[in-house]
Image: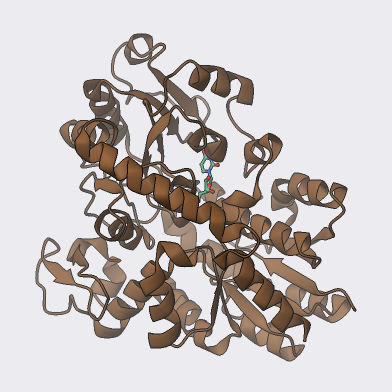
Length: 473
Ligand code: UDP
């Protein structure tokens, strides 16, 4: 039988590159030749994973497209985490859309059997069609968020609301899901046709023209919504997650994404000195940032909670930036109690450690699913994108989290108005008390389900098999 060749093309953002690398590795482990398509400065993030997979006898490779030069974008800015301000996101996305010609040249030369391309590349559907191959979409979020988002876009249930603080129910969902008007993007709320809004609309519309969608989730986590997505929204989908669970070795967990700002030894020595479920891990994903005032409130809230913590604080572009948010002598007082990682953390390694008893997360879907796969209850602190929907899944559907009370949708930056008391209450709430124990037990159940889903015969394992078989016909 001829070996199936699949191309995987993520947008240049770690929250998309990480799960797509995992996905490509998973396909390769089932006999597919997986090729990652990326740009020169993003290639190193894939290199070790690809090498390791090849060393294990699987077939993977990387193909490079040159990142277009665009007026207004800094030189060498090839990843969303490098754009100097969120206002430049539409420009960055527009630059990636200029990769179409190079992609098509590659498809012509290599004749893959299938193209898995990011949702943010809607044009890739036409590119695949030119070469008569199926284009699958990698969306990167939950079934739940897709269903809720679709209903909100379609019915605009917020349209008669006058204030951002007014609430509405997302219509037609199996659960009652209530949101504040301020928790959806302003361009949607105000029906403004911005460049970004147009790109998103095109992206969502390309779903119905594509072969189907690969979802990083597992059936047992959100069965109502996996069914709803397929049967009510009429989408073809394959759930194959949690993708993070394909990283089984210590080395793989450490090497995900960027170079960590802490050695694994230092991190593990610190965690090994703590008792089970006694540490809260705080991280807002690969791009989430806060103004100094908010970082200060987080620090004060953490200290007041009297809980131990590992806190990942994203560094700005300037290494010499003053840390004016840090309360006086905070680090000295927190010695042995709190560990601050300035930069990239080995997140999966940390979450999987038995000392971790809670996760303060921005509800990015990868982080959410990594928390679920590790069996860790969460404090939800969404910033933007589809994260406010993920929060509802965690708190109101799965009942495994406590909301901190974030209400402002933003682009990559938190609003900065969550007070220290809210941080303190939420952090204590997931670590201490009877309700915390109940939540932890529910998390344990989900962790077991996640593990089973990817094992031979499990729901995700079988769905991937079904997809590969279909593509092989
Ligand atoms: N991540 C990590 N270390 C960090 C920050 C992020 O390993 O210091 C990883 C995290 O494990 C997840 C991804 O980066 O796999 C972030 O994806 P998510 O969807 O949670 O958020 P995004 O960055 O897309 O907002």
